[in-house]
Amino acid sequence: MPRARYVLLILFIFGFVHTNSQTTNPIKLSPPKILGKVDNPVIKEISGMVTGRRNPNILWVHNDSGDLPVVYALNMKGQYRGTFVLRGASARDWEDIAIGPGPEKDVSYLYLADIGDNQGLWNSIAVYRVPEPAVDPNGPVIKKALKNVVSIGLKYPDGARDTETLLIDPITKDLYLISKRDLRSRVYQAAYPYSTDQVNVMTFVGELPWSWSTGGDVSPDGRLVLVRNYFYAGLWKRDLTKPLHEAFLKPSFRLPVPSERMGESIAFTIDGKAYLTVSEGLNRPIHIFSLPDNLTESPAFSH
Image (cartoon, rainbow, N blue to C red; front, side):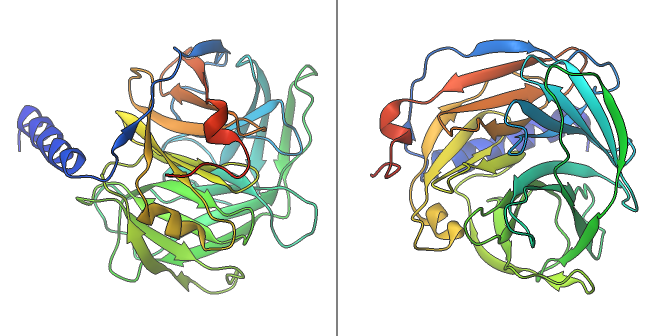
């Protein structure tokens, strides 16, 4: 199909899904501020971003397909602070990054999702887990190989999917993938503890009211869930007494994202009171949107 027709078809489908969705609560926010711009030309195709836990003033980012199995550290101004190679990992098509707990108590882990599959061909995929290294946001640049990298093999129960969204539940440690190209993005769960020796068959647990999900994050306290596409983001309430995916059964609040060329990344700040976005491309700005207090107070918010 010619590219122009393909784009029109996608926009038509997206518009249909959006019109018939449950995303019925648009929230007007103040225009975003720009914290800075990504200053390293090697970091030119950011596909995933998350705020550090061990390093709350560090943003962990990675490139899309074509790079090595590398995660980069930036400070909040976008200044490059480190390159970390995941020893033993591969990078077929990294699409998202998450951060959260793991097997060792009081240790934060980075989760790198090698889950992109544009043609829907791969029989299984992988998420790599590694303890978050220490980085000084104002210190010298670090270049280091990370040990203790664990591969979590995953498989969909209903055939291969192209996926760009990874979530980690900070309460249960469950892992979630959200598909991109289905008419409605499909949500899959790998319940903790998942095997690191055998491929885990995930469970289909729901769907979003729209398609083309490109990234997401869970607030550090586990109460709020963000998922974005190229046009806007959805924010869901999380009942901490229930599985995270049950939040998607309720309508979301629709939040703005900047007009970004290939904007795929979104992340909460460490306090959960704002969210960050950045686009693919060179020297791209890091935007921050502040959330109103009634959305972030505890308990989170109600409909």
